[in-house]
Length: 311
Image 1 (cartoon, one colour):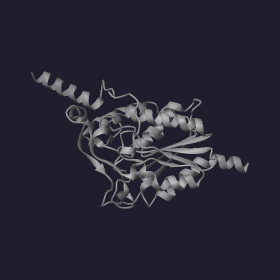
Image 2: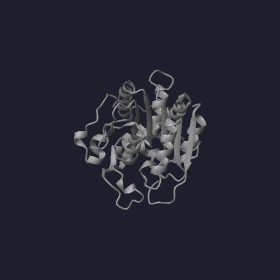
Image 3: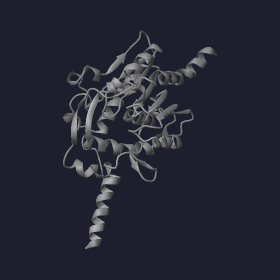
Image 4: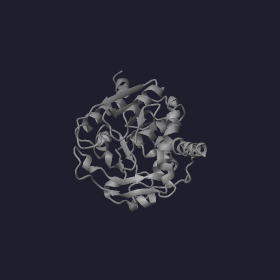
């Protein structure tokens, strides 16, 4: 009898930990409905200049909104780039509707947005933070080497593994039970969060959802496996950034990206922020580092073009 019990426990853990057999149920294309945003801060950011032929696509994280790019979007525009920071569908509106959506749907929307911009601009860059950074890597995996390849990619605090004893990464032990819990509830404590009153260094301006999102989180974790598996297909120029003290996405993720990507033009920046009252994660949102980091990113994006102009 005890053998059967042990086998049942082993299968239960295997089913939860490996996500064997998991597939996103909702895969049909969906649109972003900005008429339903819970705050004006959650809306997409679009800044266009006269006659610009270069643009940057900014991808927000989970479960945030384009508001994390409030500062950087203006600086990118001042540098001569048209700026697009879309609100992904399901985000920034109603958490009860968000839990019905999946990574497949968010990334499909991002790809459609990317392909439209790619057809409109001579030069197109992609930058993402957190899940947005992971999506940026997946954009590279999807399009690098083809006619729609992005010109350069920037990933900030991108997760490519959630829990992995082999890699020494444990983001949240609760993930080991997420699949079972998601059978009974799509989320726990889901609510809108327009600011963190006790935040410092700009973190109080964060705008998105708060709570534990079991079903969409499960979809996101499952997608990480595929992104990591294809890191070696990224051949576009890539700039990866991560803070050593990140308390949302473990720093070991950038070490995995650095080791497994194969871009011939790869650059990495490992920051070390002081211990502010925030997670040191959404770096372009923090007042103490956003100016310096945005300038470094602009230098990376424009350095070849500047060299060509001088030549």
